[in-house]
Structure formats: C-alpha cells, structure tokens
Length: 302
Image 1 (cartoon, rainbow, N blue to C red):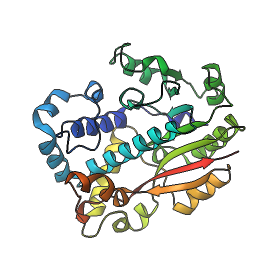
Image 2: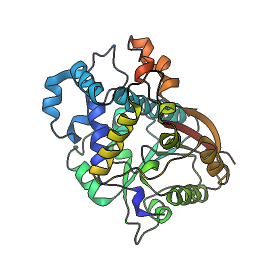
Image 3: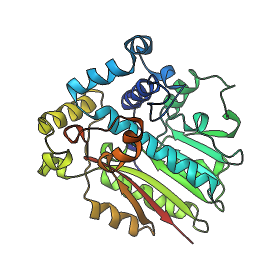
Image 4: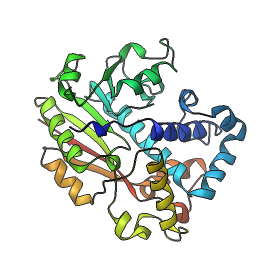
C-alpha cells in the first residue's frame, strides 16, 4: 500500500475547522458537537468570536454548502460508529486518522478497542494538543506507520489488533488524494486482516462526473459549479494534497465486491438533508446542495 494514503495535516485542519464552526451553533440547532476541534485549528479564537452563523455565511460566499457537506459526512460516520458498536463490532480502525476525535466525543462501549493509524509526525502533533486525561484515552492505540518500510497489517497486529474480532474501518476524505491502486491494495489488505470475523468499512469517494458533468455533482440551481470545483481542488493542491482519483458508483462497488465486501449504503448530502438539517430548522436549499462526494458503507460477513 502506498504511503500516500496518509497525508500531511492541511485538510485535517480544514475539516477540524468545520467541526469547530458547527460546535458553535446553539445546542438545539447543531448537527454535531466536538469540544476538541478548536485544539487543532489555527485561528480558533477568531472563529469563536465570529460565531457559527457568520462563519457559515462567510464560507457560503466562497463555496455554498461546503460546510454542511462536511458536517453531514461527520455526522453520518458518527451515527454509523455508534450503531455498529452497539451491535457486534468490537474494534474500530481509523485509517488516516488525522485530527479525528470520535474516540473521545462519541458514546462508545468501554470494551471497544480503537486504533488510530497515521504518520508519526501527525500523531505527535495531535498528542501534543490533547491531554492524556482526555475522555477514553485508555481505549485508544496510536499506530504510527512508515509505508516505505512497514506493513499496515503487521503494525496493527503488533499494536494488539485481534484478527478474530468484528471490526469497522473508516477511510474518511482520503480516496480522492491517493492513487486508485493504493485504495485497491488497502481493501485487499483489510479483507485478509481479519478473514474469520465480520467487518464493515466506510469510504468516501468523489464521483468522476466531477470532470465530465460538474452540474450533476450539485443541486439544481447551484451557482457556478465549475468555479466551486476549481476553488476546492486548487485549495487542496495548494496545501500539497491534490485530488487525483475519481470513481463511478459501479467502479467502487466492483472494487468492494472483488474483496468480498457488499455495498449496503451510499449517500450524499442530498440524501441526508432531510435527516439531519430539516429537523433542526436548517433545511439546505437545493441551490446549496453538494452531491460530488459519496459516503458509502460496505460489509463483509463470514
């Protein structure tokens, strides 16, 4: 597996920033709450002064709906993890964890073993900003890896990963930054990692229509979709994390099937609008809807 699956922290900071902004909303209006996000955001004190409404309004002036898109992805995974761990899942592996805080902010079973996998420098940066007394630290194992010299499977097994326990893996906001071959090899390795137990995986991917038909990746009436795409991809490239891989739904499903994973869910912000935003009086207008990134869940049963 390519070491490009784990990136620097430019996008990790950007996602943490959106979690911080959402956490500033009134409790009865917010979609997620992350009391740790501010620790990973440069200029967090300024964002706190700006508040939720102004910060979202400002973001909408640049890329309408981007905040809601990222927050819906965060909430979708939150719900998936909480539901899965109440059932048969006993291990949770976060690939390219960055500044993920689910181990500390979600209500998770005390028996759940959590493995955060990333490059050592990113993990050191994260650990320097959170206390060793942070909630649930005792159940988190940090697995650092150098893919030039180390195997993901070996590192996880050496860190205490149990091949016989049902496991959920998450690969959030990563697939567009890595070569397709890296994603294929990752799925292949995960399928072999615990062959005798059930597993689930979350992957987000960017639809290849982004290149062929940009309008199809947004809601009806979205203003200047080509401009929005250019801004997003330029920003990623500017922090050294360009988007290089795009997929069709069939391509992703086939890739999963080849590794004995069955697709069980495929959502975008368009699907989650009524589930998350409407109940709190924040229904997103069609002209602000993102459909360019899909959130999928697949399972492998034995």
